[in-house]
Image (cartoon, rainbow, N blue to C red; front, side):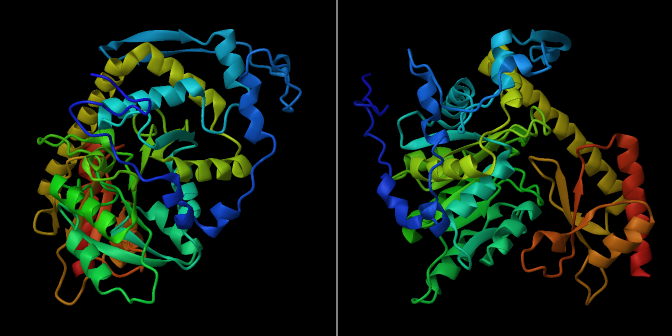
Length: 446
């Protein structure tokens, strides 16, 4: 089968239609459109041109760095009982201790491209690009500032990841909460909001969602919901910020639903999904590494932000990550993430069993199929619908710390829900924590 220069197939299937760069220019924020280029970083890549002697960047000389070697071990994905020794070469160490490209080390970016093709069926040349960031949180913030102006309306699922709320609030956005249930975002809430939208008022340009193991609800959006949301994005012209740190922590019994990034390839046109992947849950949260996959014009605007904010992602963390991935290969990476997923499934089962023992009749919940959170509703006395007081006071006094549901609603409304994380505790600690929580809730009733 022949391929075009852009990677599209000549036979069997029509070329993927992607939105042109010009489509995004009016959708970028004033800040993104006004941002000027760093005169150094904008030509940084020319140092790699063969034969060039660079007088460009003020890089410190590597001989002045006190770190002379670095070696460590990693688990063998095929046999977790054994370890693989890794010693960084002098070339790798010099790269890791020096400034590096804004978009990330080329070899790590290439690795990420290969992963997206394996996991999501997206190929190079389909109008999107990848950049590495200092964790997906860093990249989400840059995407929001690239697309949203102060006061703009935005769509967010509700309840929503608490870490993203201040980003929108700082810009004084009008945050439109979208209803969710055990199947993810309710498309009807998007449709209702847009069909009744004032004609003279600009519609939301972005929708933020965590589709797998949602923080805080643990919900994984169904395929039907995802397709419906994508169709609404096309019909009403908004972009989807797909924040997916728990993609590899899916342990449901049904096949994992395709991502928004994958599904948009089957639409009449692609280019409305900006996807955020994190290495925090599967490699190291302290490395602060993640990557964004999205339309070139948007990711370039995010790169421009990086050049004036933090220059680049951590070089040494990238080199260490790359040294691990290159030895594992994609097969080893898959084996590792499957083991991580199974680890959290067992954690979920332990927590679920303790919930049944201690909170049956006191709380109601849906068992999560991904992630590391249990989201449960307190069954409280008539007229009450707020977990805030009992969780912040009575439960804390009993020696157990959790988060009341109100934390995850941008408008701060009352909520009878509670979020509990099961990622860290062993079985004995879980049992004791929920025993204390039961006592606190019964105290709160009386």
